[in-house]
Length: 514
Image 1 (spheres, rainbow, N blue to C red):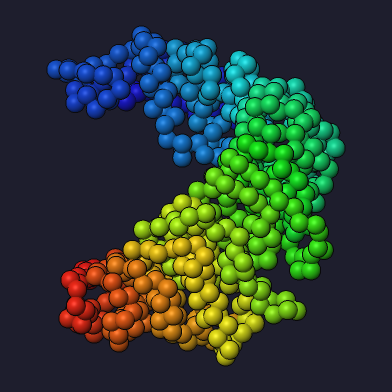
Image 2 (cartoon, one colour):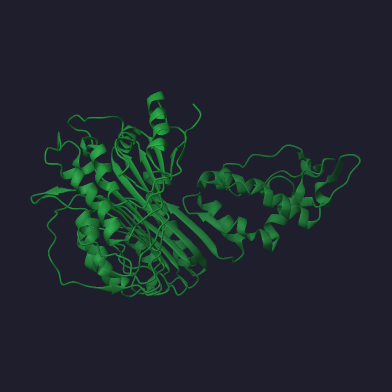
């Protein structure tokens, strides 16, 4: 606990505190030794030590504890206020944090949207340490200063790109000049990670780091016009957004990145024509890639991407795709359309989890590879009133059968989480609410006969009714668990009790306490 009053950071980043009244600041060490980082302390009475007599290792621990709550300085504004205060408490502490090499990291994180004098002060105090630089142009100080701000950002990047280790740029429309784009295209010899988020009207950023960033290991690129990344073969992690027209360009880029271990591809949100010109098939091998994530993409584009990749080391595949209706009708999910990611040998997972929400259904299974597969139904909202032909039911059953037949998913444990609001559906609601769940589980259970443990949550009526009517469903079932937060009626509890009597094997069940 520090005795004394802390001075608030002034409006000017370079404003220095008045230290005359702070020379007698003391630190109080309590008798209960609750400050574990001081080591074994046994005191009969609380000890007060003048701040300016504290050894360096204690000062470092004070700074370390002060900076341990990252939530206290999560934004650009709070980071500036939080770190500046360290230089305004007491003369000894200020000298320590400014000069001690172990504290240089306090000043090496810089937000270019800060006032210019603050940026210059932190750059000076970093004393050549590799920098972590952020820029969000939306947080700049106003439209009248955009031009001067851009000039300052440009100069900083041109002068200091050689010492930037981590770069995070969020450039909004009308806030990127030609010179700023050229500054980003400056060699970055120590750069390790980069995140570039560019608004859709910003088209002038075509190249990054002059093709020279020999230590670049991680990149996250959100841009309508994706910069050329083929010059960075050291990339191990890549997260990138693409439009449908950029599919072949992406494959060309990936072919030059053999070290990739973690790849995430996110579909761009803009509207586009579903008829994409057919191009020659391209197959790209990523021998080191273990994790592949595909998000926000239409089913046929997901299938096209997966069919183009060879990932012999894959351990986890996560797909979030959107169903669409075009002139050919409802497009099939990628998993049911000659799914290209069948494992070379059975994955023998221990569990399968199926989660139903109004806007999506999620399938999760462990194994090698592990699958996370989500179908987004929102593009179909309002297009159907009822499922007269059973196309949605058939679609879901086809996914389960693909898991069982093509991906060799034979789980011992099955979890069904039903978060649909209720039976029936009205126009404009999710097609999932039009599916007969009892029939869905009847058909699905035929392909999941290995299940021994069933866990249920949410609306459990359809599942229990099905199990109650015949012991042929999930014939090896020996335990049913109702998960926390699920309301179980007396009738449903009675059904669970009867299941044990109907099945000839040992059977148990559990329900949460209401």
